[in-house]
Length: 154
Image (cartoon, rainbow, N blue to C red; front, side, top):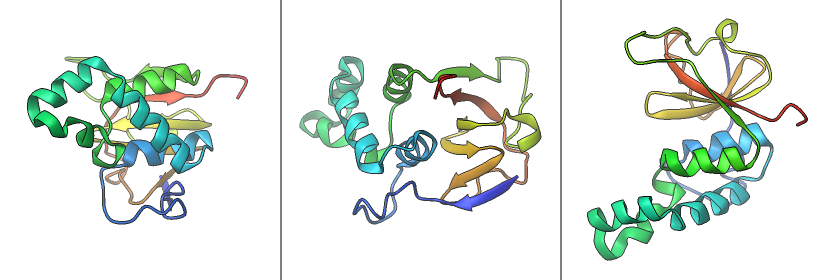
């Protein structure tokens, strides 16, 4: 599978350093929205997610709000809600006890714009080409848990 080095507009938005922002990058790339816009929206969603904030408060106390930042990673509950509200549809490709059936390969994924979830990472795939800051495919052997697709009219 081809790979294109793409930060989703992160550097242009003024963000520097190495972070766990793969969710923001992938969504910005696949949706065509600006990095800053996606970052801000996901941060708002995280701060208003009562379950997530309760978990973070238990773990970090008064610093919980700092750990709700997309810069340090985005909880699945947050990006699932965000993408559903944007009209995107989740397609699971892996079930408990069935093993890996879909890999991060162009011939195993549908064409179009996808946001693909793999182990501890999310990346954008556009018409069979990975768009990310590194190649996460592991030579086509990386297992895909599922992917998000945009609404048909997008």
